[in-house]
Figure 1: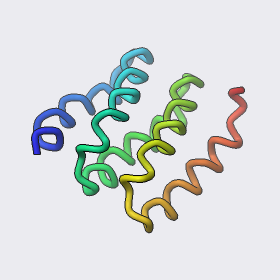
Figure 2 (figure 1 turned 90 degrees about the horizontal axis):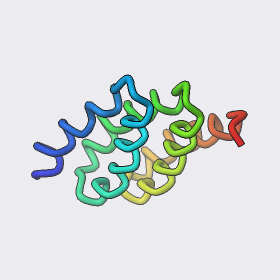
Figure 3 (figure 1 turned 180 degrees about the vertical axis):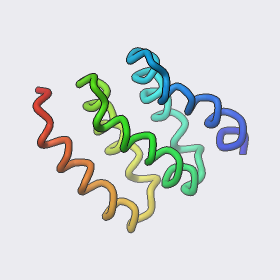
Figure 4 (figure 1 turned 30 degrees about the vertical axis):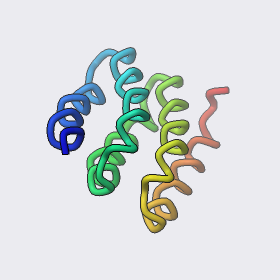
Length: 98
């Protein structure tokens, strides 16, 4: 309850920050919060932010977004995994970042 109601809304503002460093740190912090988040928050707000980060100008953010998606897949429902992860991983394979 605390994570979804108080922490996540404040932390999620980091996804929209102008600084790539802040966006990347926000992305990495979600790995620790995801196990405590409700599936509704994960599949709603978080996946929207991650979709935007997959096309970020900074290659390291795009790569870390893919890594985070693979780490949080166990907390997403089966239908969400089938719908979202395939597209996300295909997009990552086309990325020219090594």
